[in-house]
Structures are given as structure tokens and as C-alpha cells.
Image 1 (cartoon, rainbow, N blue to C red):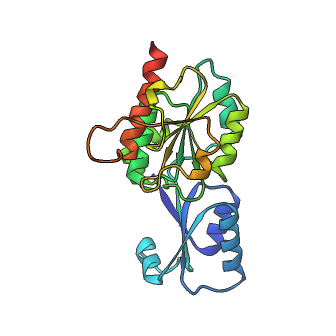
Image 2: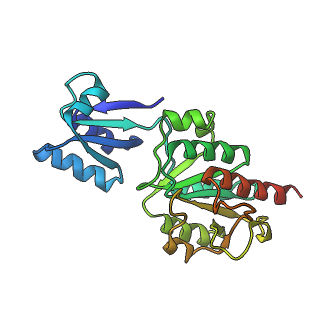
Image 3: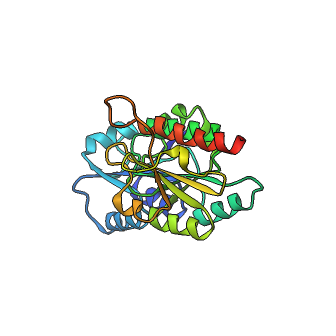
Amino acid sequence: MSSQIYGIRAVLEAINAGQPINKIFIQKGLKGDLYKELESSARKSGIGLSYVPVEKLNRLTRNNNHQGAVAQISPVEFHQFEELVEQVLNKEETPLFLMLDGVSDVRNFGAIIRTAECCGVHAIIVPKSGAAPITDDTVKTSAGAAFNVPIAKVDHLKDAIFYLQSSGVVVTGATEKADDEVYGIDFNQPTAIIMGSEEKGISPSTLNIIDHQAKLPLMGKIGSLNVSVACGVFLYEVVRQRRN
């Protein structure tokens, strides 16, 4: 499962080695050239930084040898985006990608991964910044599916969308702002489904570049579904269409 690395130089080495780091906790008020190098490397790699009191680091490591920096390592290895897309496109099956735009709750993420695995999603794509990390809770909520579905992190989701579109993948976004319902979209073609964040949904700039927008019919007074539930409905509509 997930583990920790502590010590500024050790964390720097982990970044340089491409370790799947979820987040780095840095002691508030830390100074020095090595600290600045760590901060710069983390930001260039799209790794989240959290500035915390020394007491927080002491609790995380249960000792005082952290030197002001602790990195949390993901229990899951991430895939290189373009290589993963090519692998999926070379399969004999009709490709199905799932993209998450700002889903930040680790349990929602885990539930989505579990449903994606059950629905035959070939790859999940998330942005490096603003996305939920893969933690032990994510893996537990996914019932282990996080080890079965390839996941890629990208610098910018919009660039990933353009790349998929140029590869012949039709991109559909789930949004209650859509005019069309999901049942009218043709999913019998290479497809990517985008789900938005729990609070804001899909960003407007992303909605502007996708091929289709689709919604779910809501019969009650509540204006939206939980993102993991909505994701399940969208993915099972893909499954329904492809089985007929």
C-alpha cells in the first residue's frame, strides 16, 4: 500500500526517479537552497505541496528525522498518457476512456475506479493538479480495482482531449447543463466520457472543446447526482449500447 519518504534529499531523489508521489508535506518557514530545489522540482512535476507545522510532520513520521519534508507515495503506478492511449487504440475492442475533471474526494475516486473496472473502461485519465490522490482509502473503496485499471496523469486535461480527438476518439461530457440526454449519444465508436468535480462539474473551457454534452434525467427535487453514481449510469449506458 502507500508509503512515505522523508528527508529533503530523499524526497528530491524520489521526484527525480519519477516515483508516483501523491503529495509532499513541507514544514512551514523552511529555508535554504535544498528546500528551494525541492519546491521547484515538485512544482515542475505537478506534485501538490502542503505547508504544515512541524508537529504534523512529527505525527506523520513518528520521529523527528524528517528534516522538514515528507512525501506520500501512491500505492499505484501511473502510466504515460500517450503510450497508454496507443496501447488502448491497438486493442481489438472499441476503446473506452474515462476522464475526471477535478474529482477531489478519494472515496468518490475509488468508487469511480471500481465502476470503471466493472464496465470495461480501458484507461482513466486525470490531471496532475486538483485531482484526488490515490491513497489506501481510494484502493479500499475501489475494492482493489485501482490495481486493474490503468491510470494516467496529464499536465492539462484539455491537451489530453485534443490528443484523443486527433486519434479518432469522440469525447462526451456529463453535465446537467446539456440539452441532450445520455441515451441519445452513440457510444458504439471510440469514446471518452468526462465527469466533472463534485462542486463545479466540468470546467466551462473544457465543455467548449468536447464533441458532445449529455445529461441524465432527474425526476426529483435534487439537481444532481453524486459524481460516482452519475459516472456509473453513463458507463452502463455505454455497456448497454455495445451489447446490443
